[in-house]
Image (tube, rainbow, N blue to C red; front, top):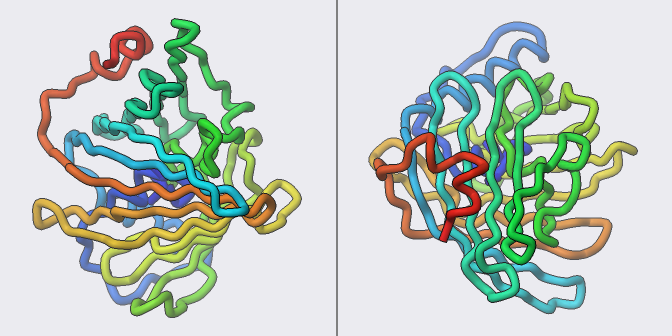
Length: 266
């Protein structure tokens, strides 16, 4: 939600498959970067669909916290980007709010927000996806899919990240409406799990840092980061996401991820 698919996108960070890395990539830094990013994305395919519960904690600069409870539903859609639905359950002031993402490889994602108080679905245009998602430090853009085709990747270096050795990549968005000039991403060599992402705004200043931790293996194949924290260096605020209760192979289908379905979610 979130490889941030992460990184720049969230779901890709949550969702990384076990991947036995080749020990060496060959080519220019741009070719190597694109190969690593593509391998990370391809290794995450094959889950079909899943649901999970999420706790979102908003923290102010002075430590004040607001908690929200959400449900997450994700549907894999073959060779294009996935479809993702976020549904807010608590507290009362956001209950029933739902956010739908249709991700694509070769064009900006389509996004819609259902606001129960207004009983209407609002489209989030690509030019507005750099805005804050429900007051959090995640933007709408962060919740889309970081498909490799949408970015120019450049391999920068190998570097230790915690207990792991990581590839460090620069990711530059190809679409003009992105809120970022570039991202710097750390992926561990063991399984191409996104460990850290630095987001640079359009003035090329370091705006935010995302840390993914507490990974767990599911179905002997897919890793999940069960906690992701996004810190905003400009405001001093942060948002933490914690996942639990994953369920794979549910009865979700395409009809659950339409604009019409948004108004029926409970």
